[in-house]
Image (cartoon, rainbow, N blue to C red; front, side, top):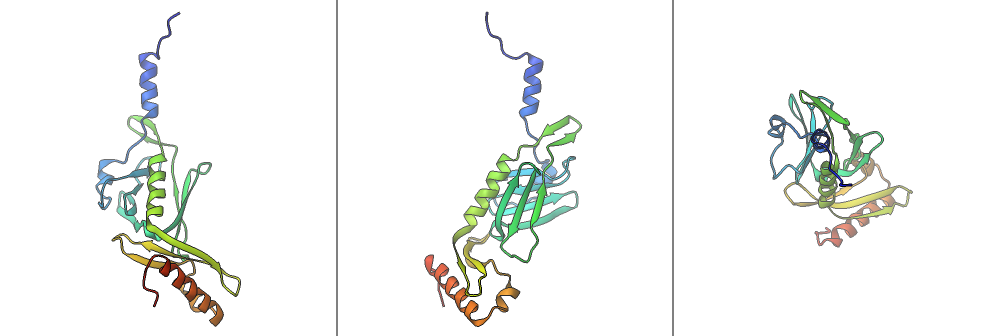
Length: 197
């Protein structure tokens, strides 16, 4: 018996199911350009808010314009929770609250419902965060606090040092902890050839 492929109506259904929703051109135009759009995900079911990833920036856009525009160097890490359909981004500035990007399963439009595929955005997020991190080291200060110091590449490709300690906490360290933190900064900067004085 000869095998036949799916019927034309089944092929049409499958093609529609596989085609993921794309950021509307009007919202894509709001994303500050630093190269191609590498990935985007909707943040609501009607597709009126989106998170977009370019080579150097994460941008959230909506009907009122640009809601957030941050360089990848400002993101400490990003995590995808498939069960909650949420990307959670923590910042290099530990004083800032994490950003949660909740992604709907589908976007409803005049054409019906289109599924959301997060793969391209997730890949762009990972690449953005990894490209901004040049070198890091973690140590425990004499007082018991664990600290990470990293050398990062900013949106203009300049190098700078960041610490996981908020500035107000670092300022309140005792002399032994401050000396250990200074030593960790010295080692991290020396590791990539940055001035250490």
